[in-house]
Every structure is written in C-alpha cells, then in structure tokens.
Length: 534
Image 1 (cartoon, helix red, strand yellow):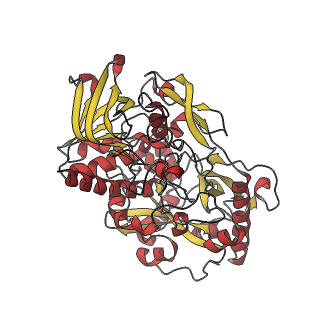
Image 2: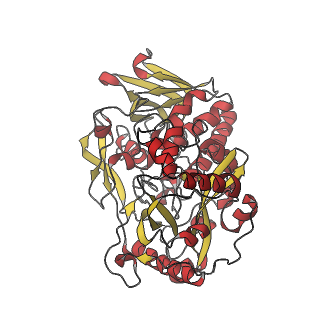
Image 3: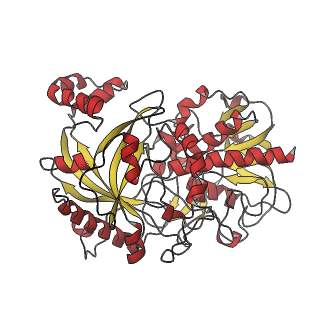
C-alpha cells in the first residue's frame, strides 16, 4: 500500500470508494481484503509511523469508573498499525456458548452464531501471522499437532482444555505481527494510507441516515474532507463510540444513537495472578500445561495449553466464562531471552555472557524446540497461575464525551468502566476447580493468593486486559445495540464498524482472531454492497 502524510497531500477534498478510519489490525485487514478485489480504499490514521510527542494528550481519557491501565493500553495506539504496536500476539477462539443467549447473563447473545465466522477464520489467521484459523482448541489440538492426547485426561465436566496460539511476524520470527511496518509490503495498488490524518467529525445528510463525508484535521489545524460511498469506522473500543457521539452537528445525540446505545455496555477482560508454583516443583505442571510448537501452512507456531470453565459449570452455577493458564516468570539472566534479543536485533552488551553461562540449558532447549516440539526450558524466578474472566454486559458501563478536549479539539472520552463481584466469584470458583484438578492429576498444588481462595471476600487484584469491547454492540434490534449482524450501523445506510466494539459479549479469550474474522466477513459484505450499487 502507498503510505502518505496528510501534510504533503494538496487536495482539500479527497475521494475514494471506501474510507476506513483507523489503521489497526481491523482497519488494515478490511482495507487489504478490499484492495485485493481492486477496489479503491483510503485508510485514515491519526498518528504517524512512530509514536509522537502528542500521543499522551491524544490518548488521554477522563476516567470516572474502575481504574484502568495506562492510556496506551486503553484507547489503543495513535500510530500506524494501531494497537498491534503493543499487543502480545496471543489469539484464541470464542466458544460456541459465548454467542448464545444465556439466561443467567443479561443482554447476552449475538445475532449470529459461531458458525457464521468459521468460513473466514483461515483468512483471518493469515492476516494475524497465525498457523491455523480454527480446529486448534479442546480435543482438536492433538491430531492437529500430530501428538497423542495425554493419557490422563481432564475432567471436562468441570474444566476443559483450551489452547491459545501466538502470532508470529513474517519479518521477525521473534515478534508478534506488527501491521504498521508491514503496510508497505502489501501489494495493493488501489489502496493508500494517510498518516497524521485525525478524523474529527462524520458529516451526514439532514436525516443522519447517510454519511456524506468525514472531516479530517491535520497538522496546523487545516481541515480536509474525505468523500466516499462507504465508510468503515475501526478506531477501537473507546474511540469508535467517541467519534460517533462527537459527530453531532446534524444529529444532536450523535450518529447511530437514536436509542442511546452508543458507548454503552463497555466490557473488557479482568485478569491477574491467582496462584503461584515454585520453579523447583513446577516441572510436571509445565510439562502438562505448557507450550507446544506445531507446524502449519505458514510455518511453525507456538500454542499454550490452559484450562477453561466447562459449559456445564457455567450453566449449572450461573457463572461467567473464565480461563486459567501457567505463566513462567523468567530470570533477568535467562539464556533464551538473551538469544531472542540478539537474534531479534535488540541485543545488549551482557547478552553474550548470559548465553554462554548455561550452554546445557541452551542445548536442551534446542532439542525440545526442534525435536520434541515443546516450549523452551527457561531459567525461572517463579511460575504464576493466571486467570482471565469475561464481563457481563452492563448498560451503565459506558463511554461518554468529556468536557476536556484533545489537541485537535475533539472531546476526550469519558470512561465509566464498571466491574462486578460476580467476576471475582467466577474466578474463585475456577481457581478452586483448578486446584482440585491438579490434585486429581497428581500435579503439585499451587499456592493460591488469599483473595482467590474459596469463600474469599476481599476484591481480587484483577486489572483490565486492554480489550475494550461492546460499546457499539451487534444486535438484531436497534433498541439494544448499534450495528446489525453485518456490522452496519442501525439506521445509517453506508456506515460500518470493524473491531471488538461490536462484540455483544467477549468470552474469556483475547479478541483479535474474532475481530479479524469479522473484518474479513465485513470486507466480503462491502464488496457485495458495491456490486449491487453498480
């Protein structure tokens, strides 16, 4: 794709077939798919190639709810490639139950089933630097990996096996996929990206039912106009509702907000450490619930084996979805970390000394990786048990507009994120089941943090996972959401939304793979829309 700077583009009015707002994984995936069909696409990115000096001011939020992590993990990154600059590359699949209407989870249920996204999973995996788009979790993993399942299986009535897959950047096998640096490598002559192009308003007709153009503000405050037939808003779970709400010159409450649904139902994942294992005794547990290397159609990829609450337990005990996994805490002088830094071009002067300090560990790691196809042995300071839990949709957990503004004059997002004791209760129950399952399998017992123990009453130290979702949720009825099953904004004929903001519920799993499957599906929808308009 051609990448240009708005400051060097002379036209006051820019025209294209499809305008995509946001250059993160969702926006660039939609753009790449559309450009591959020969359609004209213009991507608008508020940031530059690298994070600039005004990033803190642009990424600021007015937080009035539960505390959240620093701004770069809240609103995404104002930079080419968006949130892919800071993500860790872990991907997974939502469960079938996550799409269903669950009587014990208010406002649950997607207007599509899980099967609606499966045809797009492999294309999504290719965009994300993954080996497989599906068929890699639960019992499906073992034949995919060419391995026998463990002789001692899990008691799947309480906990079931779950596998996450890690993204690998095609240009750097030691890093996750970074969309920004890869943009210029995409062969798409009909697509271009404008950086330093901050969208400040969506301009509609008098009824608010059709977007005519978007207002783009560049350096020095110069305002441009971008006209298109179709618009895709892919600015993340915080900035997407913010822009809809701020586009209020013609429609007083903001675009797509007839029923006051824009910005509501803000959900994230709450996650944190619920237990620990000593490295001296953790070997058997790490061997059972560790990492595996699997060869796929795009090379070798790493998978992590964890556990998730069974659907039966969720139904029977009215719990949310929750997963647990073991996370190694590597020592500062871990030889394999030193190797990765050196081969990745980030080596430090002391890395050579660290690498030769334990050649036996390096040789054992090479064998485990290349021959056994499992995770590397590391020099550890600890092993942690982590949990990640979904949130039930809450209409009062929401994004509004603040009285404060950013450097472009846009109102900052006011974020009122709500958390609930039910999430803590779910994590405590899942943790108790893990302890029981470890005992049944003869694995060492983890030391559970006091707040995570059964009967605990102290709030759990669970932070957001920087997965803001739900704020423009998908719904069949416009009174209960913002977009329809095709991701088109209710009541607006040419405005679509890409990203996790359309999720009605978020399960326990990282959202990127689902986001990309929806983005690929959306690109196919937009091709059909343009074909019908000819």
